[in-house]
Length: 314
Image 1 (cartoon, helix red, strand yellow):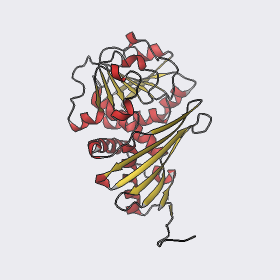
Image 2 (tube, one colour; image 1 turned 90 degrees about the vertical axis):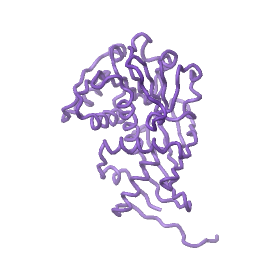
Image 3 (cartoon, one colour; image 1 turned 180 degrees about the vertical axis):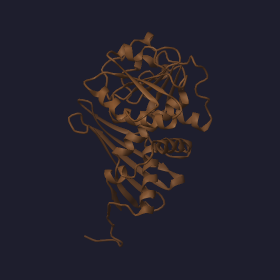
Image 4 (tube, one colour; image 1 turned 90 degrees about the horizontal axis):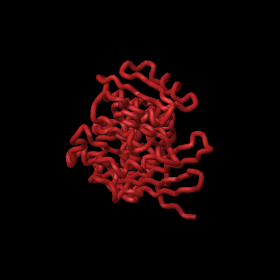
């Protein structure tokens, strides 16, 4: 059993476009994988601890990711992952999953935008400008290199300025900073929310124009949209079915249905669409499997810990 730390993964410099390729490949095999709904232990003050298992037969891998959020901790969101050989049950690795969580989340959001946006090169509005938003835009720019992305950011402290500085070397993006929720939403073609928690609706119904794609990476703040948007896609039925207004959705399908060709996705540039790709272990375990095999081939493991080779007695 090996331990893989954050730096070992980060130093691989996995490309953003490869991250998007990995999430799409994982979605293609979702139907053959076993993906129980995550178990979420929710505490006061927006604290949670989630347990996320998955079995991917085609990779001979079983994995469990553990992710927790403690607002007073820095960073507030951290995750770890156990990866097993599904044929013999051996624990292959204990792995830091912070990079995986960030990059698979951003890659899924970017793929969602590419597949469901009404027009390419419209107005892309972002709120919550941490690592998830960075990962989303980095992936999006990498898979749409020919498009100039006009990105609108909601001002908060100096986060927008820092965000813009991160992308100063990219030639296919330009930025605007706005001061209010209303300015961010009005006439936006794609709205990406990476804010972990909202206590009220982000914007009134009338500001979401026809054709808008809403991507709430963290789901709060947009329940009013559930009631009047034309279509809702989710990464997994069991993760979405308990939403307050699920039975009032006009239409629901899994995002993987678009990837597999079972669903046509957007059929009109007037459709308002929500994509609740809130995070499934399938992507975490797929990423972990790809990273594990690469590191195994290159013999780049950080620590190797062996279990007893024979039964032991106490």
